[in-house]
Image (cartoon, rainbow, N blue to C red; front, side, top):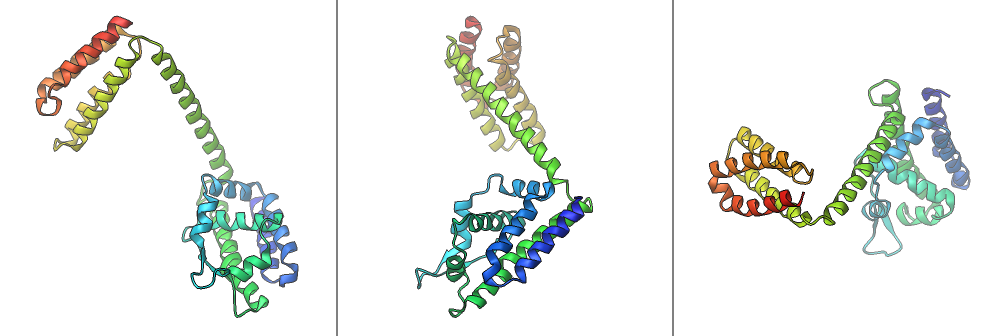
Length: 269
């Protein structure tokens, strides 16, 4: 199926659920979920929506208990489509899996004068119709080229997460190697000093151009102190000392403290 056919099948199954009676709801919900599962594009949309989604927190936020009646509550429709799709999709999956009893769910959050038919109608109008419309809007935007293909977006996200994980692991290895070196503690102190310096610079009343230039000098030193290159460290520290001398009001006493730690690093390399 192409994207249009996938959307048409979803809309057909959603329409069948909306037009169904309560007795057939379980079957229609299962069919609706199957139409999603059969579409790579729809599955990618929901995977993107579910990334980082806090299901437990969302239920507390949008399934609000009634203070007067402990067995009753209210469903509040999420204001953004990402949470709307993630929440309703996950609730439907739980209904299909038997983790949520549909009758009890409707009776609690869509109670209408004790009438199952009115409660079911409220469930369809308040939850299923907005769900259908949101999926339709997103899919049509993808089909029209207004939104990035969610499959491509998912691949990009997975690549980005893999890269971040690899970088985090590499940084962890660096930290472990650094801790084993005699001058590791000095490197940590230098970086802590430089972090404090950057904070002071950002909070100062200097021009943006001056701030950028000063932060560049600090970043260069921070990036060289654990590279085991004595010349690079010496060069970066000379620049830092001239900066500290020029801006004494920001770097008062800092160069002296830094000198001792830099010497320890250079002597330990």
